[in-house]
Amino acid sequence: MYVMIALGGALGALSRYGLTRWINQSWAMHFPLATLTINVLGSFLMGVAFVLISERMPALEPYRPLIMVGFLGAFTTFSTFSLEIVSLFNQQAWLTALSYLSLSCLLGILALAAGIGLTRAF
Image 1 (cartoon, rainbow, N blue to C red):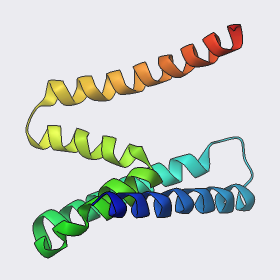
Image 2 (image 1 turned 45 degrees about the vertical axis):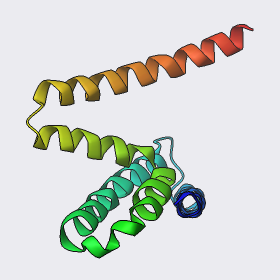
Image 3 (image 1 turned 45 degrees about the horizontal axis):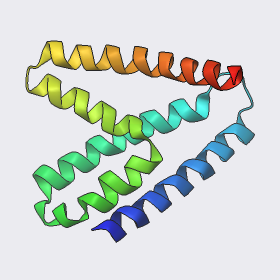
Image 4 (image 1 turned 90 degrees about the vertical axis):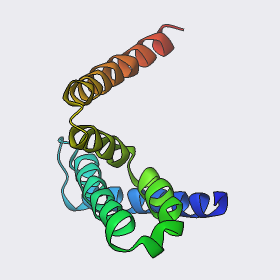
């Protein structure tokens, strides 16, 4: 299983790198189009993989670590985050979902700013 995750992770990371380069070379702009595209595409693919593996083709379950954890996890962690939010909504855990969504965005941005600030200060 660990080898499958590592292989998927390597392929996901290389795919992210290649797609980022291609988008940035094709459409030069100040908006982070590559990251947005990858996050949205990764979220879409996570949804497709989730339904195919969990509901339509259970025989693919052994490949979940390769596809969902490894490849899509390295392609974008935003896809896992999105799946968790949708799963909470599906469980009707509205407050938990909205809290997780809000806190993840807010705390992630604050943590990044704090890391930048502290590192620059020392």
